[in-house]
Length: 342
Image (cartoon, rainbow, N blue to C red; front, side, top):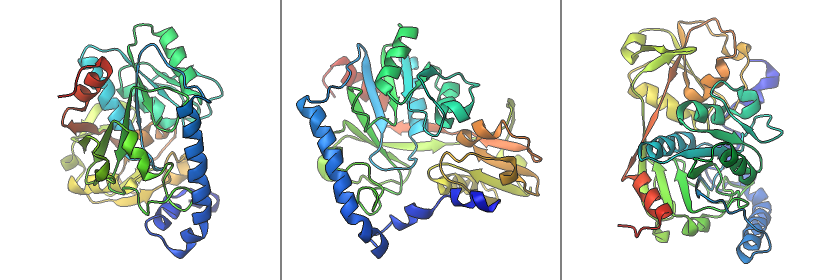
């Protein structure tokens, strides 16, 4: 990899945030200031000095209080598909992080991830519903409703801190990393203090995650990401199993919030491979993947970017499906329909 791109590799701050070591202790005063500013902003909305935008349909926010990927995209896809199966007409709004969105726009399944963002493109491909992106998610939601008046529920991807958009249900998601050292940015990974969980409607734990705040007595749901088979990059009709790839010289590429989760999943499928971990939302170039071997394995999120590259090795994509228990969609419907919770 060229030296100018090495700093895009994952790791860095996340490793420091695992504990309260001397380096992050130096940043702790700035964390206190950050937490104070976050609290002030939320208080301004709470007392009405800042006004959130209330939509004519229900709004369900999926997010987390920490930086980095925890599995929000698979969860939003699960909610969208399950709501559709329940007879609802969902729409999705997202900021389009790391994209080049300059105005509110709809995201097509074949949109350029460099413009719309990798996650919104994946949501458009898998969610089965309209997806709009924009820095102002309240305005993006209004544009979606204008274009699709049949939409009766908005899913806000990674919108827990976007208070400009009023919400009916808040879902906070955690993975096995939890809250790490428990400090706010920049000394820790938290966008908001752990006490923020006292006000969410539900907590979803991805994989082996443990609830970071059991004292708040929020309803807890367990999520597993299931993977069965691979499909060929560029033609999802061509599939193969892990057994078909056994014995090959494989390279596993992941530019997601928790690359090790992908590598562990491949290992559980019985595959041997060389790991290549990149930063979340990493913008790949062909030189990054100039490997010698038989094939490259990657995630769906990375695949939307790799599809535009000319690569020497075949690329196999591993789709994942979220399984949530107990029934999260039933919980959401009860909340937004105003029925008493069972």
